[in-house]
Image (cartoon, rainbow, N blue to C red; front, side):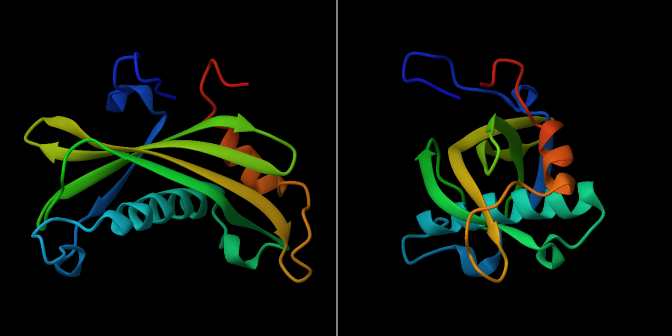
Length: 152
């Protein structure tokens, strides 16, 4: 979603926002949210949003989305206690995979300040055999709501 010379996205650039609070345990020895926790925020937002939007427990579907690739660009540090909003969008909706563009925003009075940019690639596999399969219809319908206008 963001190239080094492009302006940083704002919350308005994401079709959905999912609330995630920081937790006491998220802070590390250095007094800020540990870098690996940002991935937990991304994962919580994607799966929470999918469950809420599909109206089904996605863990019970015959196909599950496994994370095949992730990345995070840290913009500013977070700490406990802060309220966050995770921006969700889809860069690419394939036959068997979804590429999510994500962002973490800190709630700051009436503003949302960008703290991190992320990317998740979910590949759908059969829940039992773990072989790649098409994205379940429920997931595809929900993900379509997040597709960016310029997505491939």
